[in-house]
Length: 387
Ligand SMILES: [Ca+2]
Image (cartoon, rainbow, N blue to C red; front, side, top):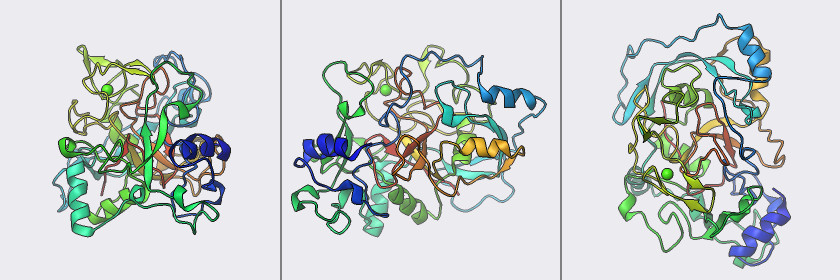
């Protein structure tokens, strides 16, 4: 996003008009320019009002799929041969081969479908909760990115009063707004962080079993390392999310509801101004409030976006598919490329959140991809670990 927009909308609304000199961002620090967190925060997540039809794939990926119709995905044996020692809170994902990506016509970066194999691994059954993250912080004294003010060294020339700790919070407008400007519903809030998800006046006392949010990439990496684990690759995440199903639109099948019940915490109503909470939640839900998928994973779709370890490139799947081989344990590209925001190197986020809706962003489906600046958290972004 353009620096001037950031300055006008974000800095101007929270700090003072002006001068955080976001273009001087250096690696390893928060980039306040990067409000372009995972959609629906990103610039035009999906074209609105797109009606999806999972039974009729279209475009280049369809050609690839037709050419390889004899290739059948295979799930490995369900039990690990050597159960490792850290299994509490984790479930075994057996590994195997699958068709990765999505044929949704409004997700060009998720096409084409391509063949992937991943080894088995252990994965957190739920996103990491506030209670779990609290134990980590108590044990280690870790301070998250959102709790640290941007430094004058990293943003030379910025007035000191502008260098305040905070994070990006969903702040819905009171009325309908055009969906081509996500600044209408995102605000940089001074003092927002994992302990205060909506800002200093909020807290997590009644939300200890909710997923921790306002987590930057390095916060997630640090927590997983403390658990002697790591973040999943994007390929691992999607394999796990599909729960053994082959090319279904949702983690649980092809229908949005099962027996009239919501299967994930998403957004109902009119985005972004009116969330009816028909599924029971207008914000995050306690983890495991919805049924698990075929691998026993909760909220692998919806609730909060989750970090993966891959760099984001919009053309990565094209590269893998062009090889003509099954990609074995792909770990992502060597660098990042987001044509909608060239100056920001991003990591892949997956799973979607309580803000996902087909009106604006349907990327909570298992093949859908999100992306975000590693130094930027929001109140709908968390993570889980694997090993
Ligand atoms: Ca909801």
